[in-house]
Image 1 (cartoon, rainbow, N blue to C red):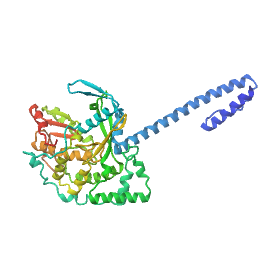
Image 2: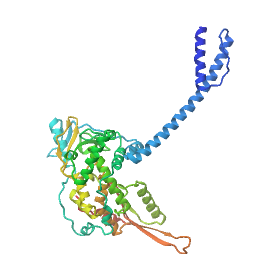
Image 3: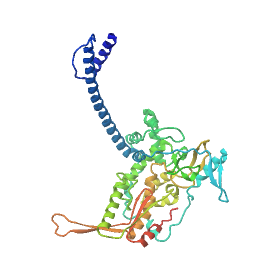
Image 4: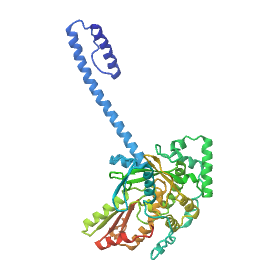
Length: 451
């Protein structure tokens, strides 16, 4: 029995040395009860000190986790905004399994389809026709003819270097900035694979990218994609209308388009090409600006007892409804060179998609219209596509007037600055702003003939 207590004492001594605990240096032989009582008192003191050490280390660990998560959120803000929003809202992407489908027959009755071949056929039919339109030429009529003319404030020379081949270092920088953990396209090649290519493979890939830019031709395989359906913010219930597609594209194609998107975005931003109030797609833009402007407008209305009407609009299937012929016209409107616009439009011609179902991938189907949701440049193309409508509405000055007087130290009288705010857009969300009910009804019907 005494031997066990001596072993315990040796273990406690090691514990004291490890955590630098301060207690008596007495060595106990446990030959009488007084020594047992004294040792129990020492054990109580050791326990108290260990609890203090535990709390300190726990606090340090929590602080380290907080700092790590803050850094992770900052990194996601730069590189993966979707993950940042999911983290903040505590919402996760909900995957769905397409193994049976509810649809309405010709009499309007709901029918449950369970046959594998029928499920795959109906899935293809839904995603092929979900936009309700096809790419076709449409005439520009009336006042829109003026709005679609090349804009006089744009100097076409700003694009002089947009089709220059990238330097080898710039291409490697594009590869380095690709996000990890992304789902691959049909070939199965991941961003991590591109990042770990040998020097010889990097040189070969770089030569291929330069040749694509020079010739304006994309490999046929880059026009094949896989559609991964996810649920909308409502129960799926085997209804395809309650799903939305995520298009999985080839990673090498996305790397090239990231390069072209970077070149175009910098030019548009530095030269103030897009005049309307759009707050997405360009560098250093966020939701902060439209929220701040909206707060200022609302506060001004309250302070001055002015009437204010705001209509919030979200466009469903916005990317799916982009007409490629109209997209070429809006690119001409801001004087984007033909060789650049032709290369970009090649992305959205002769495409074939397959949908992932519980039975595997569907047969390839032709994509009839729209731009890919998963394409890097799609957001910027949407801003270009939407700009004529926003510019036309802004030109009519139907919005809310906000004014302020500014003056310098040497000025006796200030200068009155006025700004008419009629519209603000962030991706496919639009705020229509005006001063009376009849105008708010009029604003959204100034539709440009895009789709």
